[in-house]
Length: 384
Ligand code: GLA
Image (cartoon, rainbow, N blue to C red; front, side):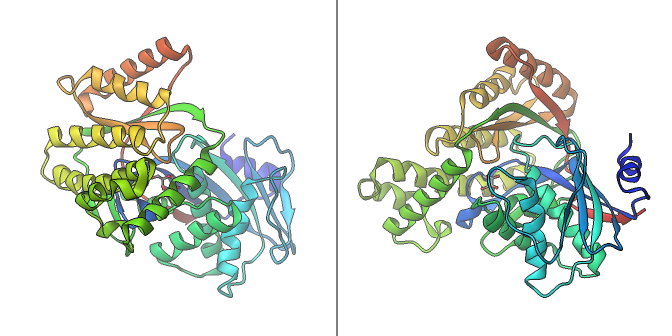
């Protein structure tokens, strides 16, 4: 049943509004957003959608489709609590964003809402940021408040830090909010200024979701962040944006091997982002191929956030070959599972997809979730 119809069967009336916030795929700039680096993600067409309507009750009701719940969860918008590990974790994203607006003095009217999604969770495509953004749009629609894209992304990031306990950077929320059709976002996470670089129409984006979810993902993410903070302290720098690779090389002994490798990834990746933006603007596909490959190797060897499935897919993409239309391939997102992203000439996208699916099936004996996408617009809300 279409979601508007489901809303009616759950809440007994038609929805008044729909908010929709997309997932994201990062083309380059991995594990640098929380260290003042620049990143280049796109928003994709897969999204979290919320159909909603104002309520006359003193409680709000919300139902996520596909979570096996028969009844909506009902809560008092002025009295709700962080959900513990055994409870409905998804609610923390909703509550966290509500709390962000309420802390600024906003009164959020009660509502009924149905959440649907075609964005796979745990695929490294930012389904949690998309949920936060879709909730932010709902709140702004109902309360009449209007934040700009930067303020909204910051509220959503804070929700993730304080309510979901993930010390993430700002990239995912920003990409879900500020994505633009046909364009790659080029975001400076140091001062949150941004511009866009067009992705030529003849280039397709192929995403391959390994469906591997690393159980230690969050803990490992936090560790990476902490290691980088330690490295910055030893290097005596305020921000990695001020560091050069020579500085990192010169401090190798003082850093010790592990922190040296982490720092080498961060400084190298920050430079790769700028080269990538330049290469994309100037249509230099060979340079793009090298930068994406180097980014993946650095994430695999120096930052150690890849996994076998991701490595096999990236190798399979390069084995398919740039002569057949591949432009570049790498893991995308936080890592420890999740997805790879490949840029490929449009006419070769289906053949690359077949090749990746076949290679994955042969190696791991299961199907790969692979789809072709392109840059889409960020979060928005409409009256129905
Ligand atoms: C996750 C985080 C982002 C970013 C990436 C790695 O997606 O939410 O903030 O750090 O990992 O680039």
